[in-house]
Image 1 (cartoon, rainbow, N blue to C red):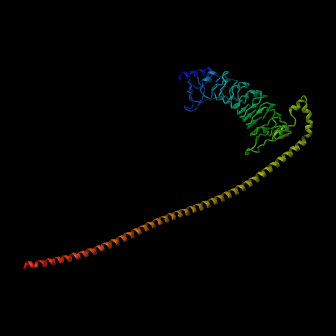
Image 2 (tube, one colour; image 1 turned 90 degrees about the vertical axis):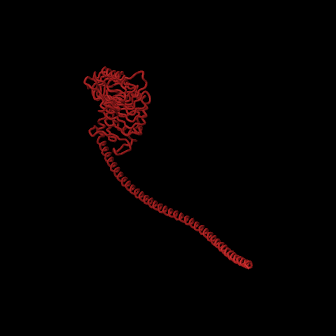
Image 3 (cartoon, rainbow, N blue to C red; image 1 turned 180 degrees about the vertical axis):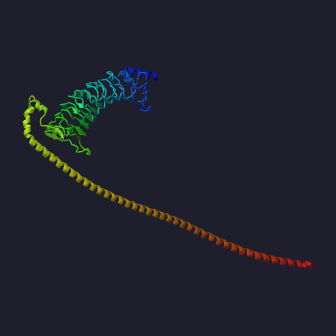
Length: 460
């Protein structure tokens, strides 16, 4: 079965247009691991490695014209890296989770019309030849989508209405001239990055866009005078990076749109939005707002006079240029004074912070000393209590020993009394014995005398 599967994959690779300059031996650079890196595409006589235990395949070089349905469905991996292989068409299998297809000649993304569920989360098709975004419509589970450097001239935002988990949408450097509005409200609650930079957009409408998590918005290098439906960038309350340079902003609109946005003064600042600035070589003949070039007239104003608006307004602008230049110089001076005041305030705050930190350290040291003193006193009390406990134990032992001595003394007295009593009894017994002994001797002597007296007449 394994040999059959490998032979089938070889046939599919060959029929799908694998290059003829591939290496003769096809194998993963590492025998084990989740990722199989193939240095070159296989030839007709080569066998593919066993991919049943791999999750990722990455091919470094070669040529592949099409990733067909049969080949895609037979690849048992979730992640494919096929970059720089001159691919023109790719079938997106339902089990793919990540496709890296940069720097190909991709024109077509094929999907299965009968499939309603795709696992694809990351799709990178940058630097290809795509010009139709409707091919992406079935991929509802996308989280990251990179469309940079393709051939889109129009992008329909309705395509993204059914991608609720989309976090990154990048369509920079495409030559876009139009963003077709969504059919309804564009609600992308998870979108954090939106890039439309380096295109040819002259108008963008965000009237029905709901992007509550947006952190990065890149609109630089277009032809925008304002963003329709956007009263101010503070709508994106979590916005951290904003790029607007290289457009045709109207100063009034730009000033109003940035009025309530906290702009970071430096990269070291943690709060606010990091805003790019127009380069020194940019044509800012009239005004800047937060370092972004703008003007008091727009192309739309110019077009109202059939192309002669610029000539009509130029004398007025020229007349006010000296005043505007003086105003700009005054603004620069005010900015410099503001910056100097901010630096002085920062220095003062730093000194106050250092003083406060020093006081806090002293107070902390005092508390530590108090804690040490308290600990020493506690230790002393503990030792005293231990001594008291020892003395109480000694007193109890002495009381116990005293009671023992008292009881022994009583016992001794009882024994002494008993001995004296026994001695007296023995003396009385001895006296009585002596008395009996004397009496017995007297009777013996008397009896002997009587015997002697009685024996004398018998002898006569």
